Length: 67
Image (cartoon, rainbow, N blue to C red):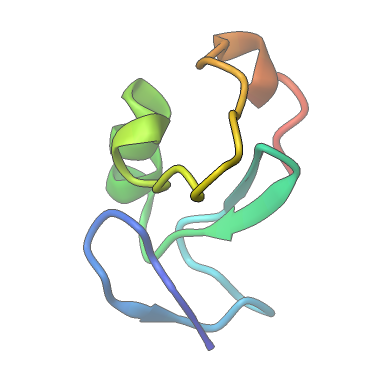
């Protein structure tokens, strides 16, 4: 089980009802399509920046290859 970054609910990564998206090289799973859409509008709000690492800025083209 993984945590949906938007609503903090547990999600089964093998059957995520909201689908999944790749962001900063990580696959993120969602509990429903609303959470996924919310994440896609402002992903940096839900994925904390790691100490010492500079991640690329948001680029909507990152979601063109959604899985």
